[in-house]
Length: 44
Length: 381
Image 1: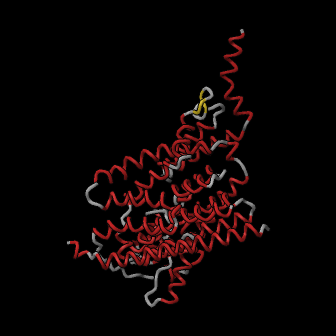
Image 2 (image 1 turned 90 degrees about the vertical axis):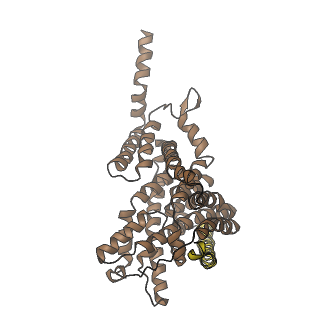
């Protein structure tokens, strides 16, 4: 087993999957803020 | 007499060439199969039909679509212009972005997390491919099949210069078409009937147009700051969405959703077949890559479901774990499949809106995943 490739793949898992969660959590927070700052009734 | 012999050589050259390389005959049969799946089974016909005919054309010996008189033929030119430059998948994203309504997602933003969880298959495949001996670029390109997102798969595999681009494209699009078969199998593997029957309350919160306009711009900025390599994908997707939501470019939005997507699909399907030549395609490695892609789709589904199950440990109001499964990018097919299974288990169970929100989240997450892989992998090679 090539341990270098395995460790690289695990690093990609941590940085990649973790990175997606970080981006999605930030978008989640931004979405909450958008819904608070620009409620539908204010638009109308 | 000599002229007759030359004419006979010319006329029989193609047949003799085919007989000398039986792999070409196999690929022509693959082309016919792709067209059959597209026409008869209606699996992604916009891509499988041109790709099927293209596969036949490129596997005819001395095919003029690849080389004409020592110069690149039309398919090769299209490939160089549209795939090598990564322009076709990106242009396709404008149309896809114009088709997406982020409203349900903005109304229930916690669904974004399922989009992230259901990308697990990508990373699972990267690890397995690495263990099987593939280099990092090919492992990552095989993994991105599990993004369930054709344009992203093409963009990433081409950017990493994977030699398996043809197989990756075929796998990405054919597995997307097979979501109604793959997902129920994976879902039933890791959920109980009782879990699939969980009902969820849908509280539709109305979303303002201002929020819908700002949302794509914010996503570009956030994704760009964290994963700048994702910007071509995210930027084109969100540009398409901005056309849809801004309210003053309806004509452009409709053109992007219809004419642009149709034209690019025709050209993309044809030029993808450049990588479907027998010598390149009929290798054991190629079949392994396609098998890994299938495993990735299953693991995406399982990843999303397991995430929902973990959340359920802490939540009073339980989530139907199938919502996690719809966090893949195959929109709207996955959410429809989830609703179909929910109805089979409990005819009164309606979870389509939550599934659609999770499915849209999967679209954002898949392009972010592609960008992050492009940001991380070259640094490790």
